[in-house]
Image (cartoon, rainbow over all chains, first blue to last red; front, side):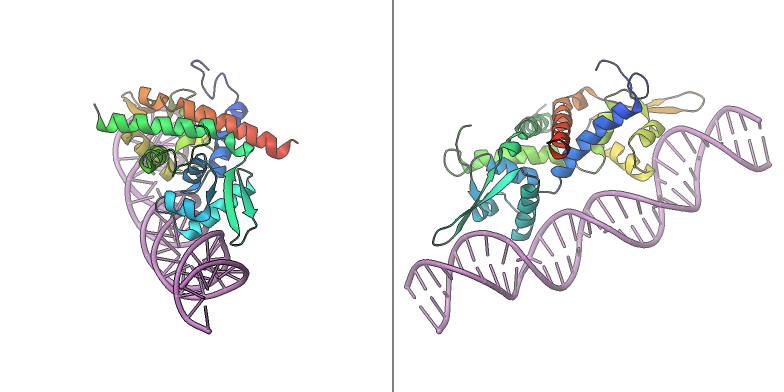
Length: 120
Length: 120
DNA sequence: GGAACAAGTTCCCTTTAGGAAACAAGTATC
DNA sequence: GATACTTGTTTCCTAAAGGGAACTTGTTCC
């Protein structure tokens, strides 16, 4: 990928396939809280109330909704641990772990950006 | 980062700093079209009409707005090339290039996800 | 002079996202 | 039996995002 141009050395279909892939990822991760939730779950299994405390600012409705969508996409797993006060734990699936490189890069860039804006 | 937990081996402030960095990145990249526009610009300099054609589905208003926001954040540059029919070219800045690792990972994952959903 | 293109801008409207608060079901505790 | 806790769900509402079409300004082409 040197100095190529979308309309020259790449066919348009190659180019749009690239954009489509990126768009697919963004669709899966859409919503204000999904990435925060996944990032938080990378630190370990969490219960609903843990997440609600740690993902600062989220409300029950949004947390519930985002968790459902993440589960549908196979990124997290909802474990019902039957006991006296049935405990529910959320954890990242192996598939969800494949997002790690993205999240690491997002985190890295966020720190870089902060330095650029605040520091010289 | 083995089996640590946000509320145990990491301080809460470490944990939220991580989440904050990620959130900062997402804020800069928010909007339906920003990543598509940057990705398209990675293939070379583009004019307004090029982008409008290649970023399938975007309208003038949104393209204009997203380009402005990207420029404000220093990710792209707007070059006015004075000539008979003044040409305006958009290109990624060096700072914008620092997003490449993120975009590459987003693209990779999108393709992986497509295979997972369609293939076995 | 009329049509066309480039690069937007403006106006108006619809859709979606998101938040607050109340409610619910099951259990446990006092 | 009343209260509280957990894990949500439901309802209602507002703000923000996004889209479409028309308009603009300057230029060139016929």
